[in-house]
Image (cartoon, rainbow, N blue to C red; front, side, top):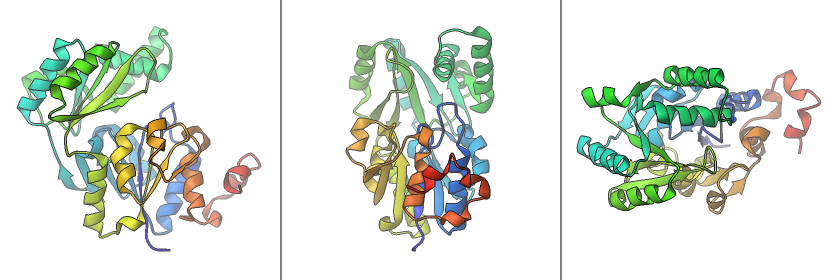
Length: 299
């Protein structure tokens, strides 16, 4: 088999709702690489928020929805919003009372209200103050979150802006004001009560980042494989030769996929990698052959 390159989205694709990665998926990634193929992270997260995933082992990363690219720990590309563009977007969000954060390469600038919403989304509950506080503190360390006022006093280059609101009409007003310059991507991560998403400068997306990586590595498009679950994976799904959308993925995105695999909670990535023949079953250690797991690898 020719060398393939696999691009993996993170949230909802690689990571479980708990934020962890299944051991089966970790091992599958390891054995795909041992079998001579490339595996890249391709995420909307910034670099600082994927640091704990890097111990799994990857050949490179695409972060900030294509705004930052590394191959073998060497940066090959980055793009940023102009400082005036950041100011324009912030004014629009503030005008319509939409909460937002600013994502740089190594840190995120946010306010406590948005942090709390993200923490509650991780909990799937609206109470438990001590646990909420634990996740808030964990997020500030894990994602290197700083107060928005710190950006005001010391601006750094920003890759993209994420937002969340309870008023869909407010988001639509912001979109109308800024869509001439930005791509608006809407997610559905937390609850029916909120609308959240991100804005990135036009021309920056996961699909264009994939093109940059394969050009750098001299890999033909026919040897590209990707896994995703949400509409910020759309361009990646369109570019890659073989595109896989998770069973738990966005129904709109599924229309464009080569195939649909099992959900993230069913180890869909590992199962599809095995079906594609990117690793041999004998690569797996004995614990994979526990009776409860056999059905996953012998359909």
